Structure formats: structure tokens, C-alpha cells
Image 1 (spheres, one colour):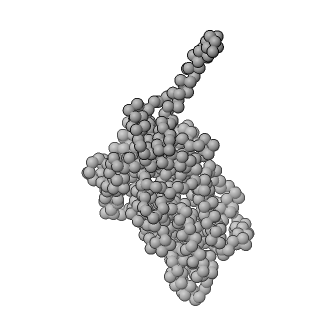
Image 2 (cartoon, rainbow, N blue to C red):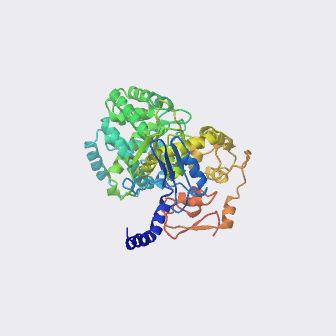
Length: 543
């Protein structure tokens, strides 16, 4: 090589050194070793951070498969990378689904109240128009939809007093109805049966009645076990949307084979075949629901009218100006994976960068926020599609990380149950107590108090015992803390200005001791809609 050529290569090499050095620095944390005998993955959340040399030494010396999840500091978060082509942006209506929990009690109270056929409803729905629409509905459904005063009263009540509830159902139904329709179509069940879930649970998979009926389809313990649903201390598949829907379809088909009538099958689903059979006997052998209705239990008497009223409102929502919000993702736009190791919601939330509340909505059948691993039984984790890609792409590293954590501390299930027992208190209702007051005292929501104690309404009796899991529990003392929450909030800020993305739920979480019910009461709010720029009171104060 002559001197001129040599000098050219030398100058070119000097020019390229900064570029090559930069590229090398960016790639140092992505892969440490890759061979048939040793595969090491380090996931870092910053291209500028460098893995400590001593850690690299440990990784390189590993003789077996070693998978390390790394973050530069304790305060930073893991940033698992998905395949760029497979990942897509979508969002779950978390706020809508979480806030829907109290609607179960509202729907139940509506069914239990005897329809008022005398009240005058301010509603542009002439009886002749309603009769015509019900006749059209009857012609295209196997249910016996016929006009009567009771049904008219329920429909008008839903369109006036429960208008907000129905609009919320229109929104939330977009998440669950595709799942229901697919299952009912497979089992040859009328697709209109999907409306039963609204009457049963107001689309709340964690709904629990006073007598223990649980889930979207409100199965009792015995019926759930009979329908092969797994129910134990850690898992309750009555709250699993997919498995409980399949069980509901099988149970409805069984009832229909008995009565050969979908209205009677509905009545039997609610009160049991025994009560329906007694009502048929007391009615002289009548088999039309409306003819035996007076001999059915009170709840069942309002059950089928509520179902048919819901069907009417969904079919004629546009005519009545009812509009639900457009959901960005339906239930089928999520995916499941069978877990290969015990893993907690906290670990999934941290590693996959998903909100824990969202995990609870998508996996409502895990009681303790833990997915157990049992040989011979599959336990699935449900995630949004775009999060599932990240989980699968880093699955081996995730399980290695989880195993390491589990070895370093007490079993998560034992830890969680021990913590729950330590944090729970038994509270005795006193004169002047009401749910909002008790919820504020312990920093919890009214809906949580109802769920923990199986309460249908807001009514309390003096001396009644309540189980409470306080948000802020001071040591082992079970003495109720004083109620300075309003003044404590007021000393910092008396108002909150509504900004884009705010909801009553997100605002209540920002201010300890303030509940959604507080915000509604202090600001005269009946629904959930908030206007940008509105200043909400954060205390029961005059300003």
C-alpha cells in the first residue's frame, strides 16, 4: 500500500471514530451475550444509561440462561419493548368501567320498586307510539313483548329518572356485548339475552348481592360450582366475563329446555324453577309470564319488565336522544396468556407499565390481586392487545425477574392476606352515621363499603357491623380516626378547577378524604358530566 492510500484511510478512520463510538455506546445496554449456551437480555429505559461493570461481569459469567430486567434507579420504571410493527395505540375506558360499579345498586333498587302506574312522566312518548314500537319488537324477538301499564311505567321511568344510568349502559355495553353476542350465537340463544346482564349486574363483573350472588350473571355459589366454575379463596370465576358468560349460556339453555319459553326461562333464572312452578300452579296452569307474574316473588315480578324495558331502550335509543360515548376498545380487543408462574398485579403493573386499576377491570376474578400458578389448572392473564405484545416479547425475562423477587421475600399471597387481615376493621354503626360519613372517615369510597359488606342500598341500622379496609390505617389500632378531612383539605385548597381529562373519580383520588359522593353533594352535581373551567368545592364550606 503506498503512502498516499495509507494516509487517506487514516484520515477516513479518524472521521468515522465519533460516529462508530456513538453507535457502540447506544447499543451497549441492549445485548450483553448471545450464544446457544447463554442468552442474556438487559432491558434499559434509557439509551444514555450504562449498565454497571460489576453487573455485566455477573451476567457474562452465567453458565445457564440468565435474564435480567434493569432500571437505572429505583424511582425509574421498566420500559419493556414490543415489536414495533405489532404494537398499536389504543385505550381502555378505564374511568367508565371503574365508575360503573355503584350502578349495580341503582339498577337493583329500580327492579325492587313496584312500578308506579299513576305518576305522570314528562316525556314525549305517546302510548300509541309505544304500542306500535313494542309490536315491532315483539315481531323480531322470541320474547313475548306485549304492551301493558307496568311495562310502560318501567320504560318511562328508565327514560326519565334513570336516563343517566341508561346512557352509561350504552357506553359500557360496547366493551362487553361483542363477547356476549359471540357466545350466545354459538349456543343458539337469542342475542337479545345480552340485555339480561344489565338487569342482573349493571355490567359490573364484581357485583355481589346481599345473598352472595356474584358477577355479571349473578351466580350463587352452588349454581356456580354446578356450572363448573372455579371458586376458591384466590379465584372466583363467577367474575370472569368469558367463563361466566359461557356458564350463563349453558344454564339458560337448560331452563329453556324445561319451559320452552324464554320469558319463563328468564323468570326461572332469577328466582329458580321452583318458584316459577309454584306460580304456574297458583295461576291455574297458566304459562304466560304476564299471567303468572302476580304469583312470583317481588323481585322477579319486576325482573322481566326491567329486561324488556332495557331491550326497548337499546333498540330505540336514537329516537329518545340517548347517546353513549364511543368506546375505543371492545372486550375482544384484549388478549389472554396462561401464566407460567405465580405473579402479582403489582409486578405486572410495574413491568408492563399498566395501571393496576385497569388490571383489576380486565381480571376481576382474582380476589387478592394475585394470579396463582397451579399444576394442571390454567390461570389466564388478560391484557390490552398492545400490552400483551410487550409481555410476550419479554416473557422469559419477566418470569426470571418474578422468581427472583419471590425468593427474596415472603409469598405474595400470604403477604397480601396477612396485610388485608391486619388492615381490616369491624365498625359498629352509630346514631347519625351514614355511608358517606363513614367512607370519608376511613378514606374509602361508598361503593367500596357496599361491595365489602354486600349492601344493596345506602340504608344502615344502628348497631350494624361493617367490615372496612381503611386507605390509611395507623398501626394495629381499630379505633376510628377523627374526621378532620374536610378542614384538612380546606386548609390546602378549597376548590379544584376542572381541566381536560378530569372526572369525579380522578379528582377524588387527588384529595385524600374526598369521595365522589362528597363532590356531588358539595357541588350539587347529579350526574358525571363536568365542564372545563368549573371550580368544584372540596369541602362542605360556604366558599
